[in-house]
Image (cartoon, rainbow, N blue to C red; front, side, top):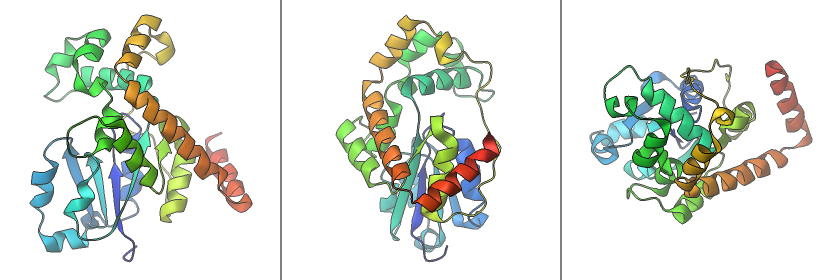
Length: 240
């Protein structure tokens, strides 16, 4: 992989990304991967890397917004995974409510409805992270950036997503076990219609972005050759 551009995995919380990050780490030597922190402080952290260190990095992954490629001298290629916005918000709420570490004490006292009304993670987070480093929720920027990604994944179609990413980046070992799955949560169909509509109202941009992601994903699938479609079917049999 030494001749490949920098691979940047923009990990949106609660989209199946922990599992995907595990798969990514199997493709590169550990000292060639830069695993970044959560949403804030991208410029400070990336600027702390020496230029020589940056040149040796082959992959970057973590919870950061689009635009981190600007901190690296080499060409780059992004990929990400998007999820149905309503389901992502529900999963995020229960994950943070049950989180064992510090930092989310307030969420532990909230109902789902209060979380949706008050917490930034429940407000178009996918659009926010794909808009760029300007801390805004700009749907047109997010769409433009997403269209430039060579491949994207859809959480609800995880196995097909992994296959497309493997094909695009010529990855080898993509065996996995699902990691960091939110437990003790209600499913979308168990949530009241009133709460679902509340989540939708706070995530109209993410819903629009998710529709585009589905279109791009299906275009990628439809572009597979006959032989590749056969390989995909064979791969999916492993999960039947």
